[in-house]
Structure formats: structure tokens, C-alpha cells
Image (cartoon, rainbow, N blue to C red; front, top):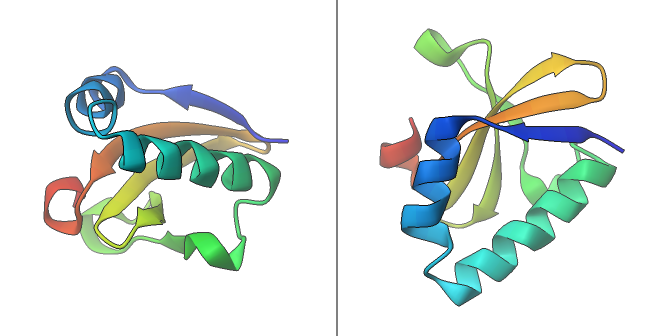
Amino acid sequence: MIKISWDQAFKRTYKKNVKKDPELKERFWAAVDVFSQNPTDARLRSHRLTGKLERLWAFSVSQDCQVILRFIDKGHVLFIDIGGHDEAY
């Protein structure tokens, strides 16, 4: 199982956008559960980012909501941002 830490900016964005939307909140926690068991699960569409964000990864919560993260070390990740493609990237 993967250990997940949350960046302060991620916490703020989560409170602002996800916590207030019950459907998105449910999808987020379901995706986190899948991610913690298998970060490369096909349902998440996990992928490495390129360009300025080349050291980061992303996975999908819904069609218009993605989590941006960094692998700290084996078995530990840091969630950095969450939001739509234009917001998160």
C-alpha cells in the first residue's frame, strides 16, 4: 500500500473544489483507494507529465478532475494539486 501525503496547496484546493461536491468527493476517495493499492491501475489513467512538470505524475478522478502528484520514494507520494486539466496543469 502507498503512503500518501498532502501538500498544503492541495489541501486548500481540495477544500475549495472537492469537499463541497458530494459526487466528486465520492469519486476522489474511490480513486485514492484504487491508487493506494495500485498506482498504475488502468482505471486511473495514470501518466507521467512532460515539460515544466516532467518530474510529476497525474491520475484521473473524473473526466474533468485530475490529481497531480510526485513520487517521493518507493511507497510514498505527495499529492500536489487537484482540478480540471487547465487548472491543475
